[in-house]
Length: 173
Image 1 (cartoon, one colour):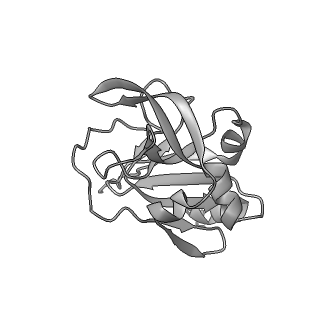
Image 2: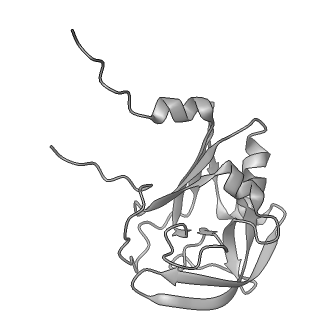
Image 3: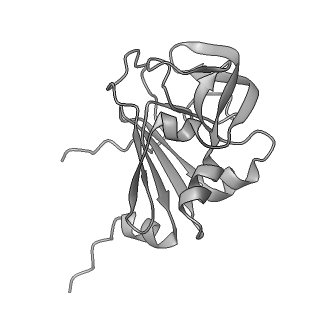
């Protein structure tokens, strides 16, 4: 039996020095099945937040920084497209790595919010640096929540979470 790779299950992630594609657009999938394409220019046109003294803890590369990242908070992006309650955001890289953040985790952080960064030190991120990357300032250990080369952000509510969970086999007679 082949085991499927789950990009959202915590795991080690080998460094990937090359972008998986030249396209930096990503998909925003909402609980009602709507899918929006988000571009770096779209993010830059929204209200920006700058977080100073951020560090990147890259698997296999150690810690680098401090950096001043600028972008849109994940809470603001979700709020712009989804007004109803939601439970989780899955952020998946175009290279197959991903993380899962609860709505409570995203909403609880106000002074150093979770950010979809598109600039560092006032300059647009290069494609090699991620062009759009998820910055989780509270994470300082293994970089398992930091995602570069974002390919999709999935917003899940209680209903879509139930649909995504595997159905246990029914007990037969």
